[in-house]
Length: 209
Image (cartoon, rainbow, N blue to C red; front, side):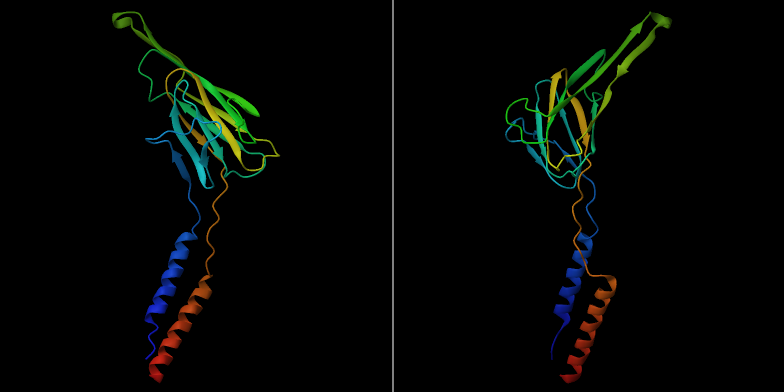
């Protein structure tokens, strides 16, 4: 007797696995974590397709360098959000730096096709005494900078976050990343037909056994 149980189970398991993969890629955030991003201009941290957010933290002289290889070609905007909330204790807080970018690999320290400045400046103080104490604030502990790429952009961007002043700032870079292509799977009708053929062969094998 021909036993088709194992082949049919394997076929359906493979279809189920393919269906799970075919759901498409969800948003992916890359976080600095316990390690540190590269500070080498000639050997940047590689960030590939499917990454939509890139997060970390950097203080003065803590250089962060990336090669973003998963972007879409053409004009698009990257958003940089900086925050000093986690570092702020009291009084005045000031941190600043530059975002350097290049459409070709960095060749030397500071190499770029363009740059943007970012800064977070905040102050909190009190005046008066006793019942007349007043609390004052100025500025903000957060800042947002947008980088719009050229229409001739081809999909790979070299990026450096270069803090020049102050304590650690947390940052998050929102990337218009190219999606990871989903794995193609048979249509529902084809899957059903395949299963039915398998059942018919199984019944025929039983009759002829």
